[in-house]
Length: 304
Image (cartoon, rainbow, N blue to C red):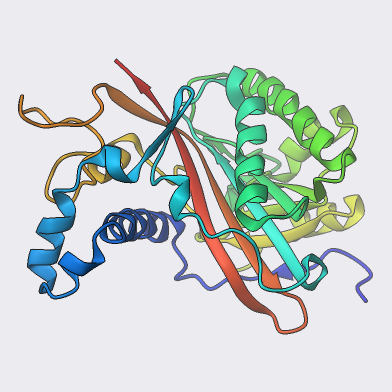
């Protein structure tokens, strides 16, 4: 049993950006290869990559209303191997800086629905929301600052938008979809502004301490007083930059061929792709502490 907030440290070498990009490339390649294993099984890696790369995107993606699933849901492996009660499921949603504030609530609904469908469950144990442009600043924290902001909005505009999105998080919590809810990168001053304006307070604050190995004492004391558990992480705030996504989906040597290239003969979807959100999820077997299922969902908007 624990009488107050604890600090759980994650290994410093875990970088979600690299893991996400690699995971997307591997997932897309595996989906293509699954379409014709008999042809690719005997090929060496270089020839296999060329053969896989030539498969039209329409064969391994699937349209649904105004959405294109990449890869198609036919490649989805749903569910967990044991009973739901045996797992701790955590979802971290990264709301990306290119998305408009007014879409955040919809993005929350989309992201949690995708994870619930993938794992074939009705709830998650912890939902953490990472808002764009906010970075915990240990030096600022010691003198009462509220950290760094890197979005085209004033602090008050961003706070209003975060509180509006938090109402959606509160609905997920009150409906039992998210048992525990939390934030990322909030310092003491920002929490002091945020907390009084919420109905359901966050129980977790996840902080990247890349620039300091120990959290400021003032932050630890404040979290204890407010009943907030402090976790540390090494995730990138802007986990999926626009250029990176374009490279992954594009028609180049390392691209998936979903987006059309500059040449007239290039097939693919035409337009500019803008990342909207990324959801990172883990399912840990409680009695063994083993991660059984871990993955990402990402959403982007295509505009011509």
